[in-house]
Amino acid sequence: MNLTLGLAGLAFLFVLLALQVPIAIAMMAIAFVGVWAMLGLAPAIGVLANTPYEFIASWTLSAVPMFLLMGFIAYHGGLTSGLFDAAKLGLRKVPGGLGIAAIVACSGFASVCGSSLATAASLGRIAIPEMVRAGYKPSFATGALAAGGTIGALIPPSILMIIYGVFAETSVTSVFMGGVSVGLLTAASYIVVIMLVAWLRKDIIPARAVGIDDLDGRKVMLAVWPILVLIALVFGGLFSGLFTATEAGAVGAAGAIGLVAITGRLNWHVLRQSILETLGTCASLFIIGVGAVMFTRFLGLSGVAGLISGAVQGFELNYFELMFVIVVIYLILGMFMEPFGAMLVTLPVLMPVLDAQNINMVWFGVFLVKLLEIGMITPPLGMNVFVIRNVAGEYASLTDVFKGVTLFLLADLVVVTAIVTFPDIVLFLPNMLR
Image 1 (tube, helix red, strand yellow):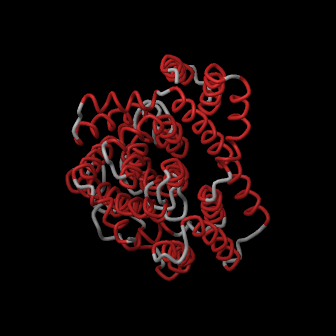
Image 2 (cartoon, one colour):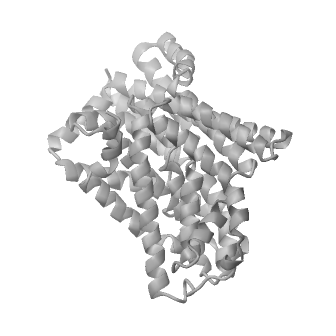
Image 3 (cartoon, helix red, strand yellow):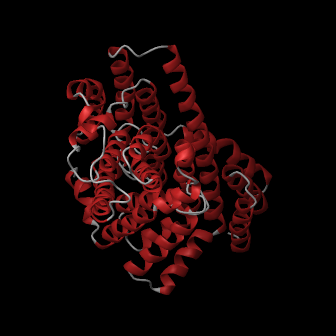
């Protein structure tokens, strides 16, 4: 145990991150040098050699490439293309119906995707031009889609939740179940924002959107039925206990390929593009995970994790004070770091604290993902905002998009307050599994 070395390594990590060193490389380098300094070169080489296999060979983690493949196949195979039209058709008479349809479509896309960036980019390309043509203020339209994209990591399957489940050694299926209620609550809060703006500010959302009545209901349903079948297949089997989260990924990927084949859109280009994007995304996620495992071992050997846990207990923070500190930490980190990095850097430090406070790890996993997704739309580095800016093109500037997400950020803070105050919002569905 060497507390001085551990604290120095923790401080040096943030220095490297500030210098924009890739987070995986930073964590692996510090862990290697730290273990070398404490135990010698041979143990350090052993950690470097064994950790990648030990982490990536996890059975639970195999759900990540399967769910990613399902999402990419569904997207490139055109299964998700009818979601926005279906939502528009059902909400055509509701004030702000076009904006609400975008949020509903984001929620539907999230059910087969697992990534907030992919959700924002995919629906943004479709919804933003229509919303602007219908008279929506561009900043509000782009802000709604940037915020709506965050639902992609809340409603299962969520890649963030799978990674969390592996690190926290808790049930991924239970975390998924908790994510359903928070994802739907988030979508509902965004819908309330849109309805209030439609009611109070006709200069932002017109009284009636154009072009919705031109939709052919039969064609819309023909376009959307495959994605509904896929959602029912994955969620039905997962939440009925028919198969685990890992098995659900494999079933979902096979189901997506089969449905794309049935619709006649399966070809070499769709398969190749989906597989390449799956491999690229998995590689970037897994290398960060390997670095995080190595860094966790270094902190454990140095005694830093126990020191921080003891210090927090020494302050005798109550539940609400601790949650306030955690919210502030993640909101600040979200301004400068991407979600996976922020989660994997902090979990080794926070988990002993949470364990000492008897915090339910299923609840915390969902709460953590919600906080990380708020970071996706906060300045200056909200990644969803940058994605929407690129998608929006001439419709809105980066400043416009950041202005557009302001009301949705306020809605997010209301949701976070509700989750902290009423934990059963997250836990009532997981408790039904018992």
